[in-house]
Length: 336
Image (cartoon, rainbow, N blue to C red):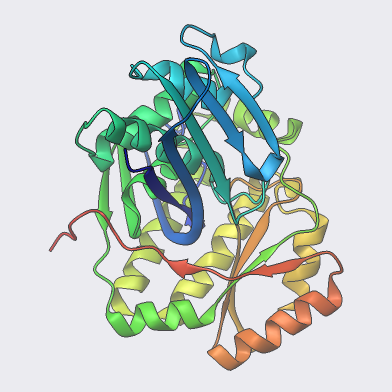
């Protein structure tokens, strides 16, 4: 058979993050799904029955046999995806890789989960549905593995596009693919600057502290309301093609993250934010929940300003590097 190949995008500029969680109860998130993402290939192979797993980013290989508990696998997320699916008899090779390094805070684990589940669905000739795929991937991480996870990363990986996600009651949500003008999309691609910090992201004890505080405060905590407002404002700015206001919203959201806990915007991130400050930058967003390591999205004022900012970042922050990104197309129909 022909090898099955599936790609799932990652996400950046996640306005409203932290509101798409169980403790927020309801939330709004606006993000950009981008390439590079995660690439998965599934093909028959010679060898013992089961699945030979090859993770290129970690230079690791291991063998999975049906019935193996995910928690004892070298990579529990992959094990949980395999255990979730009725895999046809035979020997299979599952190859997983990405140009996004581990710990980039771009939702890569959700993209891995979505891409692997999608490849296994194609193997079984099951129709792919973005909403169902996002829900299943989220359930794999939260229910099967007991991990903390908002819902937006799975939606970005499954649906692609520029999205406004409204979560009325965790984990159920509606995903609206924003109708963004072609010239606005082109400007975004020319002006977006994604900077990978020298250190990979680490979900530290700070995250657990913030979760406990927000859970105790309840879903209508004013700090969560500010984040929800950022998502709505960002979506409105993108619809209007107003990148200046969109950039200002990115910065406002980063400040709202820091209000949850100062350590969510780490020292290296602050150094980069200082390096890009000025007329060349329209705004900056710490990608993901924040904390140690990760990445930052900067919206430059122009393509020329982007080049100047990239040079400024690499000169001022040794170890940081620029990741070239492109907007991923949407798999969902835009709403009127």
